[in-house]
Amino acid sequence: MDQTRDRDQTRDPIRDPAQLRAQATTQQRDQLRTCDQTMGQTRKQAKSLKQYASNPNFDPSEALRQHQQLQDQLKTLEQNRQQLNAGLNEEQQSAIEARNQNMSRIHERVQNRLQDMGRELNDTTLHTSDVEKQAREVESDMKSYQKELREAGKTLDLL
Image (cartoon, rainbow, N blue to C red; front, side):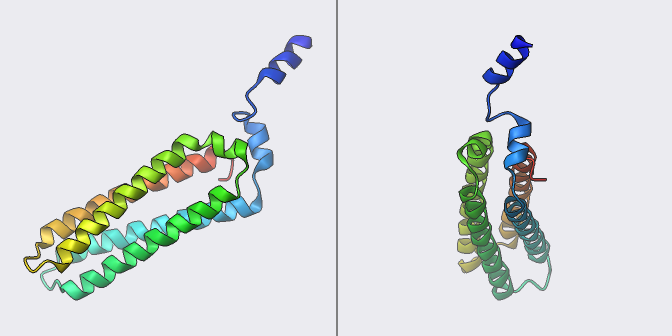
C-alpha cells in the first residue's frame, strides 16, 4: 500500500492523464473545436486556390482574393489558438509545449509561403504553376498543423 502511495506521489502531475482530463473545460473543448474548424477551412481554401491556379481561365484578381482569404483565415486561426492557450493552466501548457512549438513553426512557414505567393500573384510575370505549388504546400502544412492540434487536444483530453 505504501509503495502505491509513494509511486502516486512521485508521478509527474503534468503527465497524469486523469488530472489533465479533470482540468479540461467545456470552454477549452469549444476553443479547440473552433481552431480545428478554422484549420479545416484554411486547408479547403488552399486546396481551392491550388485547383484554381491550374484553371485555364485563371484570373489573378480572383487568385488575389482567395489569397487574402487564406491570410485572413490564418490570422483568425492564430487568434483562436492564442485564446485556447491563454485558457490553459501551467500544467496543461507544459503537457503540450512541444506541440505548441511545432504549431508555431508550421504557422510561420505558412505565413512565409503566403507572402511568397502574394509576391508571385503581384508579379507581372506570374507563373500559375508556382502559385499552384505554393498552395499545395500550404494545404500540406495545414494538414500537419491540424494533426498537431488534434494530438495536443488528445493529450489534454479535449477531444
